Image (cartoon, rainbow, N blue to C red; front, side, top):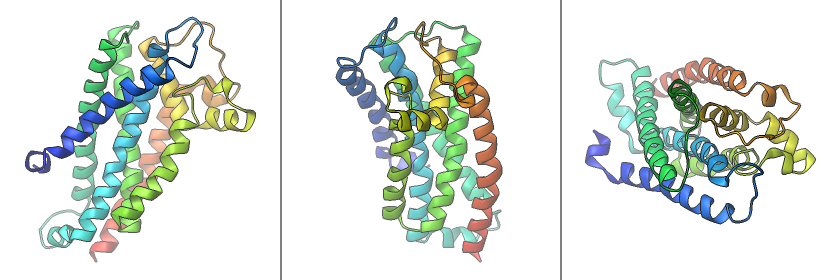
Length: 247
């Protein structure tokens, strides 16, 4: 209902991934050499990972904005479970992330990206990306409830998201990074998400070295474990925080 009334939310959410694909493909692609594979195929999984993580931050900023505007006070007067607000918010953001992925895939196809795996592996990659986005949106929802200011959550989210997305294997092979950054990238959950997507899409460059860390050796298991941990920790924490604010 909010998107229908404020369509600019969806419009700008869909324009952003197009810009990411075009800018990173043609700017970084001219400077980064991926042996045995075009940069576009290497890049797309990284763009998918970055976009779904960035898209999940809307849960936090929107919750903080709702607290500031007083809409939560309105919800308190209704005969409803407090968890419904959080579930609705995170599921709504999941829909936006899914639409963003469709737009990115279409743009990626136009610039030369191709899936070389089976249809089941393709669907598994999409499901894994969206599940991670959904779990991460609960983390950001909790932060939004904790700070209660849209300005603070926007600044705080960038401090979290930039190291996670850029100090990873999303845009350059982690083996090319200096040792401290390479170690961080290998244990970075976004790196595991991107590597999982590359493997499932069939976009892993031949002969690409794999890091020694357990997370690098088992990216899909790492992502599934991370999703479970985020949901188990931040779903109850977010609901508890919301209920305490309501009281």
